[in-house]
Image (cartoon, rainbow, N blue to C red; front, side, top):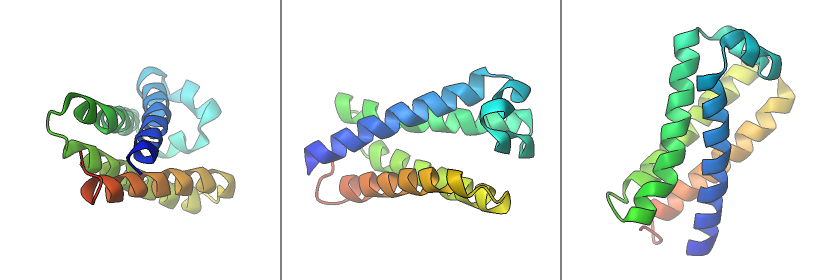
Length: 123
């Protein structure tokens, strides 16, 4: 189970690092081409969401590897699950059914990591 958790943590970290970096680095009008929901958010809000995703990605991996404050791993996973819950609400409000599926999968994987790392498979 520990190996499965590490694999999921790595996949989630890669996805959230890329998504967060895109939100941070691209201007809002350029980001709207690939992510239409961006029009609902101000530039600072979008950058904040991106920064939280990058911080969550780092929090999924770094504390577990270094052994420094490993409790941050399930906390990061919980935070990323909350971001995905918010994303589902945004996509439901915008009637974007295709995007909801990916958010639900990312939510479930984040909850799996939080459950595993808070539970019997903590670091």
